[in-house]
Amino acid sequence: MRQIRWPVRRLPGLWGAGLDRRRIQVFSRLPVVLAAGLPAVLAVWFVSQPSSPARAGRFLPEVDNPYCDIRTYKLRGVEEQASSMTDRLGRPVIVVNARTLRDQPSYSRFLLAHECCHHTLGHVANAKKGLGHVGPQAFYYIAPELKRMELEADCCAARLLRERHEEDGIDAGSFAMAEFGDKPTGAYYPTGLERVDNIRRCAGLDP
Image 1: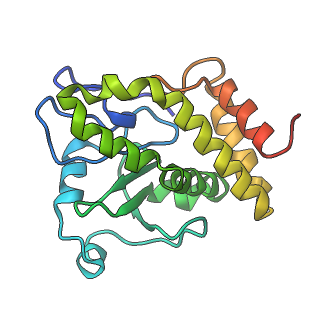
Image 2: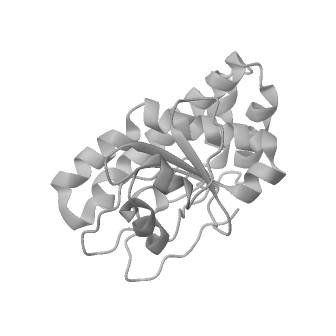
């Protein structure tokens, strides 16, 4: 799990997505662990498709997400593990890495819960609303909020998993963050240890 170096032509991106310097019809996206989300070309393709369930279903397979009533898709061959966004009609969407779902079921539970929380806590909607008023340098206005929102989503996810008695998801999320140690988990993100402490506290494992 490493950060991706973005080309010079791009800003670091809203929650790692990458925003071209020109304004494009890209939404807010909140990757969980990596500082990079879906490639910008794929992001633009995704939101430019007609948004009916039938149309979307022909392109991206859906997966069951027990943590929220938000359409969730899986993708193959992408670097990031999960992202929150809205489609071109403003409807909430979650995208997860197909390989992660297959190979890391416990961690996938944490990812799905975390992305649901970004939506239910209003992070995605509020960020999208703010982007309409700050111009092409949006990332630099939102960056100070990234740490707070990641910690909030982690905490929310830990509580959801605890309520469902899915302690394996909590442990997997903590382990993934612990791998970063005292280094940030992404651009302007909390450190791995900060996220571990936060997850365990919210799950009631630590005082």
